[in-house]
Length: 150
Image (cartoon, rainbow, N blue to C red; front, side, top):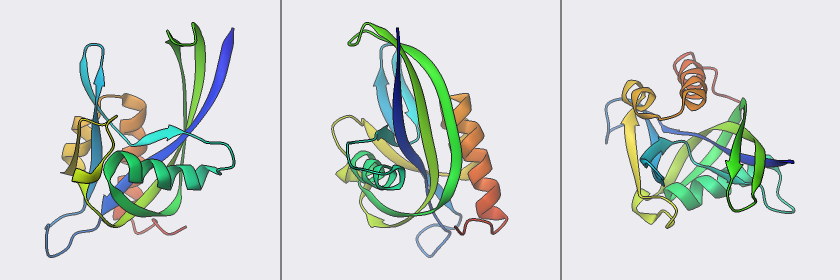
């Protein structure tokens, strides 16, 4: 049996400014059975939420940052085995490009070990999962090309 689950999240960036010379991306570090992973913030869509609301909420919960959606980046779909459900899960993650306008990375929830800002090139290297690296590279292209508007 395969269960289908929907998540939403995104690539959170802050443009270059007085505090930092180049644009940066916020990544989260989460625990895994074999250590930890650097990832994009994301989470399950709750009843009554649309994908955009979930992305903004999950970014706030997992990073401590307030951000607004600029545009949808795309979707990632993959399968994994859930010990809790004792079944295969087909997960679709909807990812958005979000611009940070406030908050504090120290204000993240307990699911996350650490939140850190990275310059674009470093962020691509840090991400654990290839499908998330691909989405980050797409986001960087949009930001640098000026196509981040919705």
